[in-house]
Image 1 (tube, one colour):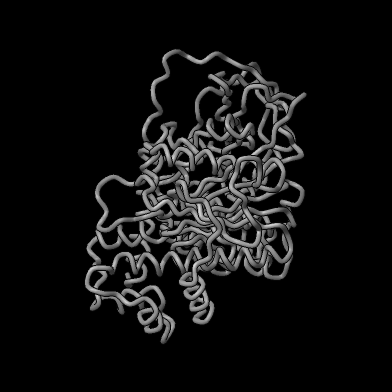
Image 2: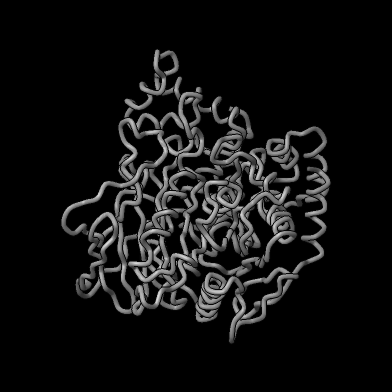
Length: 520
């Protein structure tokens, strides 16, 4: 295994470790919530009524992708008799242990969860936010994101979605229609369900915002570029998942050509014992999930040059060939620090002596590493933060800036940077250096991860309220500005920090993005 693969694997392991922040069980409720029932086209669902909001969990939006439906486009869920219990989450899609304690091997996972504020109903529909979770297209679950604060404060209906992950979601093979994009097809099926069903839960089926973070944010990019997603959503929110991600930048999500995905699929088939089978796909459909999880690569990507995703989202957006909806997009100030810290803690110190080799492992193009070392010099004690800045600028900040500029040439765009340097840590233990606002650190300001609110200071609570106000105002009107909110101009990046919400575009960040544009 080369150095690049070793460090990338460590980075992917850290992505899973980040998820442990929301694995805790939700706090015990003082009394069982009251039942509430809604009729869908599939049948009646019984959810739970809480103080100010209702929840409906584990609703199937597609048939279980098992047996012959493993690696098939999602099919319509079968109706059910009687009343379906929707008071607890359904299984997460198959994945290794991490965000989901113990992982999951249950393929019957194409479910979604609805959180709706009191007062929402068919007569008074509310805007809808459909949330796609992150996790490198390998881990995650919609049920990890408790949306009660967003639903009640923002007066919106929130839908969180499970979609197929890993090899089960993105395997590519020449004999499999839909190859390389089954997880994206699931997301579209969930959006079709929302258009058809959300009115019964008090949501406005004609005002749907598709939102996500990291791999979920990149999924929004993919749906912007996917012809089949036309008309399925009206606005887009992209958090730390720039549409111009590239496979050679291993921390940010991206897509890969179908040929690359098929080569990875052939490798998986061989590892799973099906490489020489007469019917490879039939053989793979018989392989236990646990063996597939063991055989799959730690990094997963959707495939482009496919019927669902004809073009790389970066190319589609550069050409203006995407669904023209308003976009709210941003990144965190210190995106790369979490990965850098994990790599350092795993026994890979970044010092003046080791820095050239580390840079060359991630940027093997001749001459590129030397230019990076000159642009980002490492001194005796700052190797970790410098490495974090390289990851953050190369994979997130500068691609987000480029994505924003490309989109803004065609549609209204609002850009932000989450910059709370004291954001609560998402991983246990003491990091080797202060992390600032790393990847995923904005999530506790929008959701109660795992049903448990984070320990925020009063100033951070105010920031969380402001962010929810911006996000939900955008979902309501396509403009995040509103009464009592600091003004957000489309001409500047809004820095989001406690008691310091201001437009910003620092000369240093402009300088580094010019550097990355020059080195390619």
